Length: 103
Length: 152
Image (tube, rainbow over all chains, first blue to last red):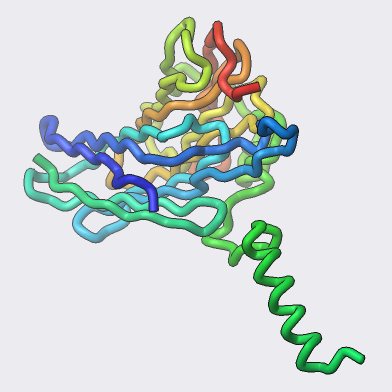
């Protein structure tokens, strides 16, 4: 489906700052197309992140999040070489998972 | 005369059409909190998550630009220094969807998140922290928008 997420996870002290850029339209359901028909809402509803397989973050999003959403969070107790996995599900049931290694 | 077989086939075709058009309810994935996302203000969003009345607090921070040149992409951050925060939320007061994002805080992450939201017009943006005991604290900031973000 969409382009892969870009995930960057970097150590800062004893925590890892994770930045994720996702590729998604995030339609609010408020816009109309040229013919005047409402473009249906299509947006990421849930994002979860795991550190070495353990879920560390779950978030719920609404249509107010910007297109091609950005997310930044900080994982405690991470080390270089750890795996960060990010997974999202949208309101149509589409999903995407990508992973990165902490540098 | 429509046979049973014909009726079943037609039903399946109609269902497929409906599914294609997104009209069938999708399997509820881990309860997306619809009531919270339909809330029209901070108090209702907090209540939808089982919290009490929001109280302003210096221990909650909302960061963002004073003026956003592009309302379609406004970087905002929410954080809290309070111990035991269970959930952090970002709300855009004047958006049709007031609740933009809700983050479930675990022990493994800092109570600090950044994302980008759409803003239809200049509005107050709030960071709301919900504690395990149901207390709710918030901080707000006005973000002026020069170009609205919803394409309308």
